[in-house]
Image 1 (cartoon, rainbow, N blue to C red):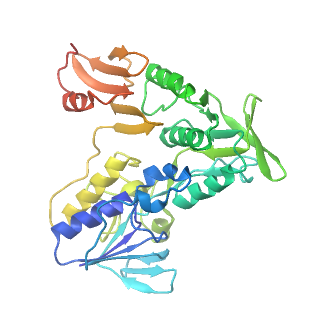
Image 2 (image 1 turned 45 degrees about the horizontal axis):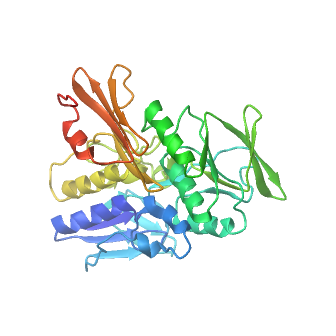
Image 3 (image 1 turned 120 degrees about the vertical axis):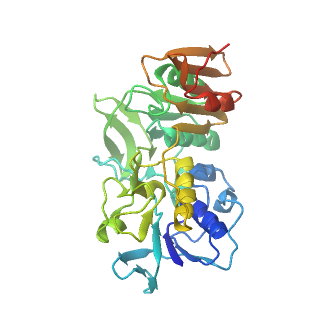
Length: 380
């Protein structure tokens, strides 16, 4: 079986390493615009530090198998009926199975002034290298728009690497609105402000002010203006569905897949951020890996089905653990909180059942919380 994979992120890597173990009679070609071996895209902001290289982010172990090849080419289009892939080097490639794992692009705010120099959206290592070069001469007033996972990581890395204060602007009422309850977010905000990250929320950006072609400020809907010589937009991702649309595959926000990760064409599958299952767009490392393993099982004759796991997020914000597990937004749940200046634990219990938990500054009880989620629980 010849399998072509479009994309070279964690979903692709997990699928390839899994299928090579499960299926002896296969040949796998991976096409990617990036010439590097698979790397942890979630850690690209560490490249802001001088001397850091994308090779430091490579996923280990590397893939060294005679049945596998990686080609640094762009896929121009797909012919599903004849099972052909056309690449930017003018070549045509036949396949038995095609796997779309080409991920997503960073969203950009469609606002006046939004294409001025000094405004960045970070998705690839090239994006981060470009920002790193810019910051050498523009580091007095950095602003990050978006208080989600990547936005906070960007703010903290800029503050650490450039040794300056950073302003984060979030349109929601608190930081990490998809992961944290309000009180936990306020605790995190206090910790971040002690690290040189100033937080403004809720504020909504209306446009960018410019001077000589460069960004000079961010203007909010209420007229308030935040001076800026560097702006990082962290406002979500947009699944890269254009290749699938052109091939006639069914798409919504992402490429629609069934429980076996099959698209509307029987020999084409989709995994990772480009895929949209019943549970929506994955957007998480663990989900992308689960998809990769599930598809490997399916193609090797197994009966696996993809089911979204328990919502969870684990990140480090300037060395500070921030963990969210389960449902932390149920208003009927009781929050049992343990907190001091170094850590916060919030356990959410409803009808004597643990429904969610948040840990900031500690991961000591994470395993316990994960094992007890959905079960009868009493915090002693």
